[in-house]
Length: 346
Ligand code: NAP
Ligand code: ZN
Image (cartoon, rainbow, N blue to C red; front, side, top):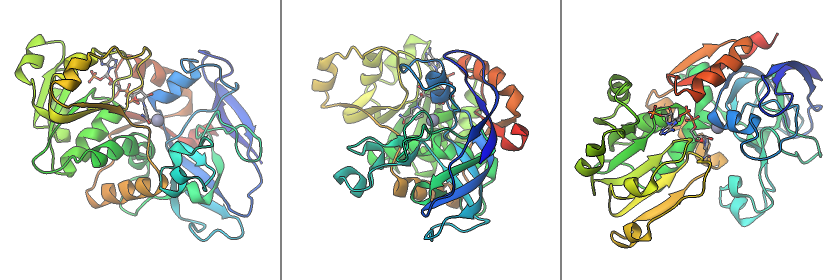
């Protein structure tokens, strides 16, 4: 079936309306009528070619919420009329140890990303900036009732990407967590860490968004432009979740960790890290990173968010505002996630 979409025609060119072909609904597939698609900074990195050559024209979008319009034979997980979500991956081998262990994102054969990937039928995947998508039902999540559809869309990437390290590294009562960068991922990290019971500090470039940070659940908010922040907070945090899309002085942040504290990078910096090993050695500190999360954990995150009344703070835009929204994300001018109303794809 041919559906309306917005695609980047080439690297760093503005997105423009187009039509794309979606595959027939196969035995294990569902057809989803998309309601909302979030704009993730990764969409911008990919479209701009920051992560290497891409298969243009490229339809981004991996924060998808919509309604099941058709379910292929054999699909029991979702029914016509259900509200569902699709995140950053739409397939994996399902058999390797990583897939079997619930880490499909680390599939040994490579997960199939929601866009700019090669699906099992050999076609190039196209993302959620579109009216409809066909996805293997095993990679489709249930959006619990009570979650607003637009506010739920960013949970499919920003939500799981922050929930996974917060859970893995024990964010909870009695634990001090710092979130670096208050953007799409950062604001979800603050809400989720707070709901998990941790004591949350935001480390932002300035104090411009301080009021928001405190409202979202942070107990403290500091500007990283102030050198005093790094002396005041030395040795303080059990966990630092770094959501920044630019290069940072990682050593300055390692100094803020307790003994056995962990810093997890979820933001993707352009340059390799220059790490002062003595900061790890001197406190048995951990420096690691994390990529999205598995399907079961994503469902757990959605259920957790529904239970705690957590959605993203969204600004809904129309398809024709996508390019402007990209510029605003690049300028850190987003509070806190742009979500495209898919009805405006026509
Ligand atoms: P975003 O909304 O643009 O947020 C990034 C935040 O980083 C900004 O709001 C800003 O926060 C801070 N920042 C930006 N430029 C900075 C600079 N030069 N120096 C210091 N801080 C800066 O982006 P996002 O959608 O949350 O994505 C963040 C990063 O995570 C991207 O690199 C994206 O590709 C990556 N990502 C990774 C995964 C994964 O699986 N690991 C998943 C999704 C996204 P302040 O204004 O508060 O300083
Ligand atoms: Zn994303």
